[in-house]
Image (tube, rainbow, N blue to C red; front, side):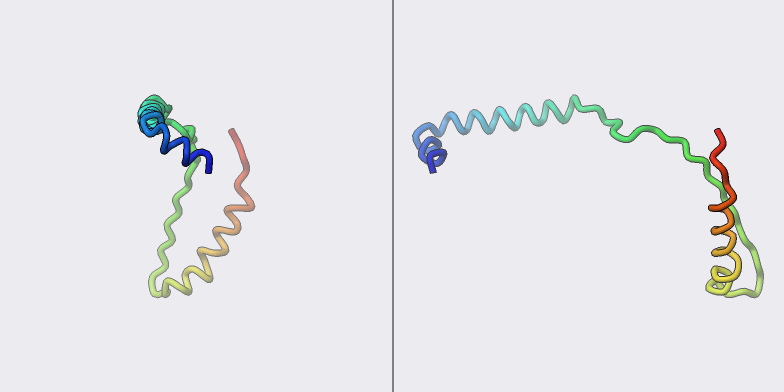
Length: 79
């Protein structure tokens, strides 16, 4: 309750403090480094399966799921 009484007795102090916090926040945001996340080069492999006459669900169950499993277990981390 003491902070409310203090704010009522000295309103200009709290106004100036809030303006100071706002200005310092804006200055901090403008000077903050924008590169929060480092640039990472992740190797990507693209595979396109073409099998005519097969529904998408069957394609997923028969080919895509098994090939994804084999890719994740056979790919090694080489630099």
